[in-house]
Length: 95
Image 1 (cartoon, rainbow, N blue to C red):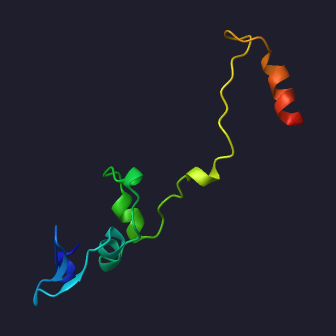
Image 2 (tube, rainbow, N blue to C red):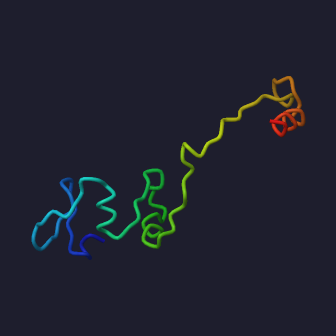
Image 3 (cartoon, helix red, strand yellow):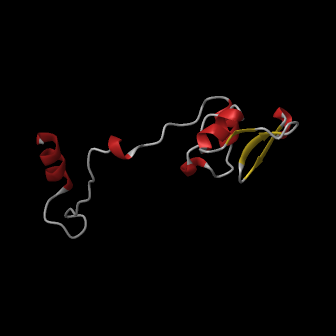
């Protein structure tokens, strides 16, 4: 992708191949932007079509930490707990 745009990318940044002028690379967002891509979060970097999705602006929204309302872990009478699943559902609804 970089070559097709006349760019060279290495550990020092993104450069115009013809002039050697540094265009960016301080932050990874700059690298993605210079390639015309939406930034791909590390969680999606698995060679499963994420580059194509970024090109087309259709990367999925990830669940962010701030989106979590709580953590739910219980033991019911189905395992080693004291309350039935139904009792726990009713308690959750009431809260």
